[in-house]
Length: 514
Ligand code: XMP
Image (tube, rainbow, N blue to C red; front, side):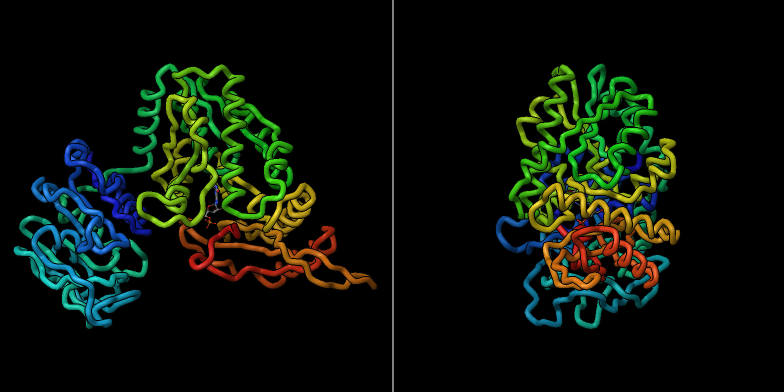
């Protein structure tokens, strides 16, 4: 099978590289740079990509690879840090850029040698996305310069014979005009691949691999009813059938009617389904807690303990596995390898004493982005309404209530959120937005209702449009719709007297408020 290895040096865009490679129908995996030469040989890649990273190659203890990797006879593409590392290891010289002009950040006009296999079908002059403070002062022997910008003479290097290429810019981000083409050129023209990998293939392979791994053990699956865990359930239903038990924990921070809807949808499936009503348990653990990270940790841990209790009732044995629908953004934003921690997604917070009870944790979706998970769901025959559900975070409304979470605030937010969703549905706008919800802020303000003064909470509405949930833009909801939502919420929900609309994209904000 055609395979690309992406060695991860800790850049924030690394999974985008994987995504672009898979969009070109080539299977790939992102692995840590600490992979040994034996592991790399066993992986048997037809090409290797070194990712970007936040460090400087010339500093001691910077991430590096065994230079034997260059003796495998396999093409290598180094991106940003990866490019500098290749130059550094092969006898070039990388230094801190002395002049400000040699440091480049953001969109940069770049000039290419378009005769090069890597730059076929691109323009001689186009925009690239740069983010580097270091500079390749000396290019290694055997390499030549194949792209430059006004500020920097060596934006890309190539040793065509050995099939080693390095680019200082990020071809994986959309801002690089011919980025996808450049990556595709690396795969097809440099590595000689054909691009035969599809989601159908991934599905078949994953089902077969899970079936083999689980054997005659059983799988306890954490089901929230959201897209990821529903697709996960379908995958395991296919792989292990009756050996699967889906456990749905109602933590009391679900949206209006959601618990019952999930129960109804999954009771119809031919799998074991258990609903655990743990509302009280979660609320008492959250009492008095205001810090977002602490809330997430508490919810993550409590999820674990609820599961453990279920597992005990279920008579867990050392052959049994725990499955959860972790997807890629959960991994990267919870801090993986050298990437910065943005927020701890609840499913990265299982306590070790829970993990120990199982033979292993299975997270087969962890390399996929949301839209890929949806594609996989379709592949598995899930109905469109389940596949296209908007994502809902595991900790639920608890991270959409700023400050302490109480039963009263949950009820208030549930009603307001329901009205927002109802009006969006009535205006037939669901298809135009990826995720939309209400947030109960911790701010109160003065208002006037009837003839009286009010001093109630401000509610924020949030709606974003995105394909991968790593970056997102706020949705331009028509004013009339916002107006209807605002009037209805203030009239129908006690405790809210002011509505604001969040107009920040991600980055700099995140989608959720906590
Ligand atoms: P952020 O807020 O990080 O959200 O921009 C990106 C996507 O992830 C969802 N999200 C979560 N999903 N557990 C989840 O399962 C979590 O703890 C969590 N936090 C955020 C969020 O709703 C959005 O779709």
